[in-house]
Length: 283
Ligand code: AMP
Ligand code: MN
Ligand code: MN
Ligand code: MN
Image 1: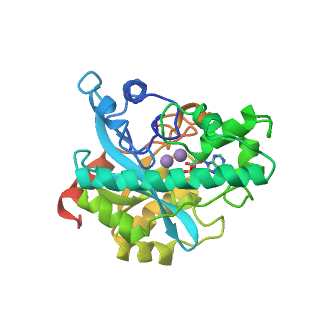
Image 2: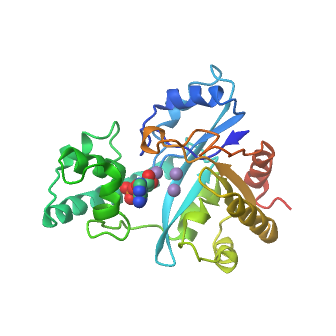
Image 3: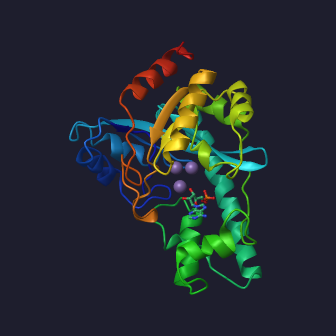
């Protein structure tokens, strides 16, 4: 089994890269791809764990795009961490995130929930600040009882305290990922668009924009969703990937490699992904 989607404290997870690599062995995985949001900062420490751990350690990232007026997450799997242009592009994305964070601090103050940059930074173990850290800071300041309440009332996508950041177009994200030697993949499509959203046409549109794969196996999918997305990928000729979206203590009960319990991502998906990486199309 493999896991091609997980996070460390370099974005919005809680584990160090080193602990994550060790956990990969403990979960008896054959491959593990680290996909922190907007950064490869966890990668050097992660890769340094090879060959101490047996699990193959792979490089990735997760970028946010604007699609149909919603946020669509795109995984850049197998990108080259030594690609200087890609690193510069990630710095730009983190700048947009910092800008959003500054505006969110102002907005929350207007809503009567003032938190400072220092309050938010105190909840993070790296410079990348995410809404997860805002939720914890709001709880620490007593504006909500617990962090999930912050997402329900204040900083969830449809809440008054949420400020969107400038997001990439899917085509732009695909170009960046491809130019860094990676494969662009639609992350957790089942989480996009709400319950009734039908993916058939939208996924074909994304494929035309450069998306080459989709996450058919996911830590929080129901069996029917997995079946639907694996079939859709086959229909469109896209590669299937899979991962837990493990965030350590920030997603309680969600385990590396296993998700909420039943996740099993087959090794052969990585073979297809690597073929896709080399040849562009795996037919
Ligand atoms: P950001 O990238 O700073 O906008 O933060 C997005 C992160 O916040 C996601 O990757 C999730 O980890 C988390 N998140 C977003 N919405 C929710 C929610 N409704 N409940 C819990 N966590 C959420
Ligand atoms: Mn996350
Ligand atoms: Mn995501
Ligand atoms: Mn993720």
